[in-house]
Image (cartoon, rainbow, N blue to C red; front, side, top):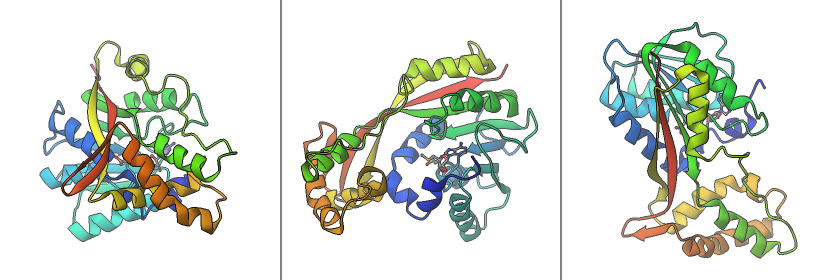
Length: 275
Ligand SMILES: C[S@@+](CC[C@H](N)C(=O)[O-])C[C@H]1O[C@@H](n2cnc3c(N)ncnc32)[C@H](O)[C@@H]1O
């Protein structure tokens, strides 16, 4: 695979599509990273997207040296915009596949962080195994590797229910993940088998997609329309916001308070240390 067309196509809207859910998880693992980030750290933000993890690191460690890698060249362009705007130095970028970090020598990084870029190859069932082996290879001894995956996304059922309302006779698109990829035990096994052995911890953390209002949240969710509502007519698309709003309200994980609306999610955070 030499490009990543979905994330290339959505490079400018990725942050709105994520609606804070990947950032919330990164905030939690960055605050208890061990070894912590120091001026001599060299960090890989693997499958970095628009640099949500890198931006969080730079906010607290402005001199941190970070390599940002992603398969989608266009998300790296968005990231470079943030780098230029903030005048950050010590950031390199490269178009790389998590399964084959081919320009990276072994034992290069002190921290290898893969925030929701690990189970992103449902078309390649061996993708995560290859990616975990690559993360182990490029990590220095004594370094830490973090991989996050979703345990519960919770919002796709509303997208599917809206599809059924509009097209009752059609099977809706479902965002399936292969086998047990949503289980913490699966993530732990991937890390163990990559070479980390017993130096592995997996814990669940809370997250959510969130926006300033339900209208805004639904707008953000509709950025996934070419996945869930592919081929819909303009008239059908025009009906979606109101229908989706009702379906999101019905979700057991929907939360609305003054100033925000969201859907609670749960992630797995796997941390592993190279002895
Ligand atoms: C859900 S986004 C996560 C982005 C970012 N890490 C964050 O925390 O928001 C997944 C990212 O993985 C990238 N990706 C998907 N498959 C990949 C692969 N095989 N190698 C490298 N990057 C990949 C996508 O382009 C996208 O930027």
